[in-house]
Length: 259
Ligand SMILES: C[S@@+](CC[C@H](N)C(=O)[O-])C[C@H]1O[C@@H](n2cnc3c(N)ncnc32)[C@H](O)[C@@H]1O
View (tube, rainbow, N blue to C red):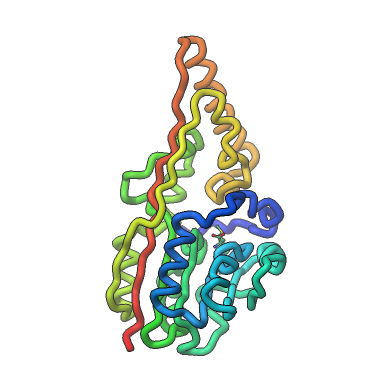
């Protein structure tokens, strides 16, 4: 199946709402630690969106490059306090010379890239010898994730299983594209509980809050909301409350280009 295309230009103006906390999240801290560890002087984020993660990395280096397909997201990234070197382009044809970066990474983005293995090969090409690729995201294949959205919105889990590669596949592609010291680690545990009607205030339940819901048509999205409302009404009639859980492990896959 072709990767479903999501028009991020439409979502761009609201996208940064998810980054309301002043403190870097656990994955932000993991990125900072990694950039320090590899003494990254030149850093590229692919699928850099609004530039939130690149902006965090200004503590490490001023040479921060962001590549994204969406002009709307790039416009938002221009507003970041750090001066970012931004370009529009596709992850599978990186417009950079061989051996340019100490760190190439992507966050919550590789499942949009179409040919994910081609992106890994491109990352290898543009990394300097000794440089590191970090892919950060979820793995809906590992069966441990609990996300109530998967229960109430038809086809969302199936679509995720098609567009996300499993951990094993990503690690296999990294090895076959000649990365060394390939490994994975958990970098963030997303955990929240909404009880009863409180779920209707979950910011991640908004239509454009996640790519999973944004890919749904208005009708499909409303059908899911109606299913939640019907379940709430049934539970209330029994004087019970439904507990809506989100329990997702975010992983970071790492590989090093040999020196
Ligand atoms: C979920 S957003 C993540 C943005 C940012 N990494 C973050 O975590 O805030 C995914 C981003 O990938 C970009 N994207 C999707 N397909 C792409 C492609 N083929 N090449 C480059 N960027 C792409 C989208 O435009 C969007 O900005």
